[in-house]
Length: 316
Image (cartoon, rainbow, N blue to C red; front, side):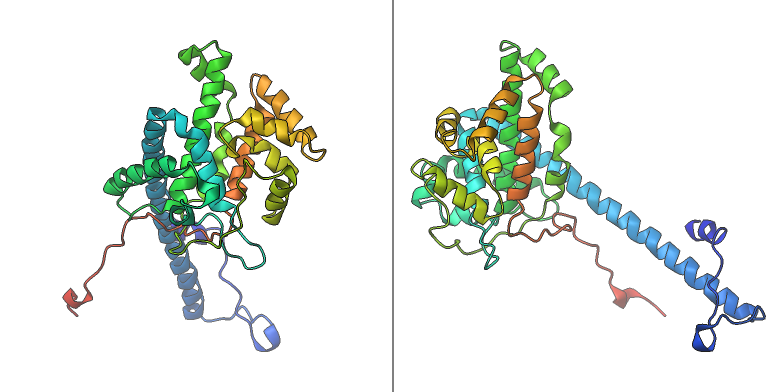
């Protein structure tokens, strides 16, 4: 037993007398037995709590895996929506305001889709709305929030783009491309992002005017918006694919800015390498930070309802 193992290596705590001085060794055996019982009981309680925690982690992990499969299938069927899914995630999260601690990755974009900055994103939101129906149908721990769904769709869209790049490097050979991505890809960098799972949906739109129309904004306006949420030129440069349908055109604009230029050039060089490590790792890191803005994560979300015990059936 866990408690027995613990007690074989740990002494019972010394009982303290007045002024915190340890009592003499003549403490009665009942007192010693009581101290041992306290340690044994607390240890067994910790073991139970740990087991329950592991069960909940597995439930969330399995649910998350199913979500990713559903999203990957939906995005594979409509790959043309990848850029829009990325912008959808960016625009939902970058409404964050540090001064008031409002906005952020809270799913509010579903209530803001008619705003100018979200023009052209309705099809991406429709895809996620349909995916949500399927996900909710097999969820045992309640419906998925749009806040989570939007950010995990961006993850799936990025993985799709990373895989497509690997396939392109292999001359369009899908089998070789998958092998290349498995060998050199950045899948192992998603750990922290995956743990950020349990966002809550807001029921009100975020204030207007916080998100630029990226295609019409100046580079300075784009930098100012990123700085306002705690990011900078480096993150702006790496997220060029989130800023419109034409990544190359966006980078042509960013490269004219002295703050963005070195980062744009760095990521362009990285994308030419076999592993694309600098680009992919920095992009994953930036999305992870962006997708947590303004959110307090509920780490018990999507776990199965606790079994209720009817105390009225107990007979004393």
